[in-house]
Length: 197
Image (tube, rainbow, N blue to C red):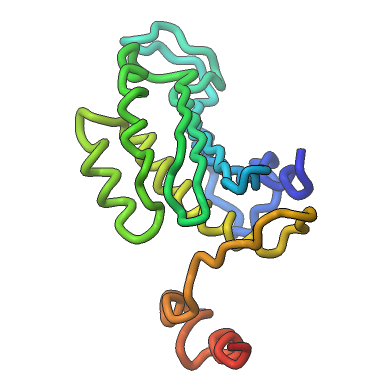
């Protein structure tokens, strides 16, 4: 396990929200993305989408389901090149609510060749919307595209071995202006970033 990954595994710890009203758990959804820099220069983003219920229940389609068993469990690996285009995609569906869900796995290959930049969400829905895809996989791909941007940014800070390619800059400073509170035009962060140019 890479440094810091234990933070992602501790579902019950680390919450700073106010104490809740009395309640009981009914569902846990987790979406986890892990990014890796490959020796060939590609970036792999592994994504996993899981829904569980903390109680036993009977499914009309799967029969008796044990407490904590996965209702949804989808996994993807995107391999992205320096120009932020998907070069390869691997998919698996270890648990689905219906027997036929995994039949759409081959359709996910339609993502290969797409840019994860601007317009990715629209292009995804054109290729995998409705009966051509899976709403949970689309949700996972949306998160993975955002994770890929952070992966490229993180790669800028990661130690480099001799001969490894220089990191890719995935955003222009102008593209960040006014996209959030910290990047507001008149804010300290943006002023400092603009001064470093």
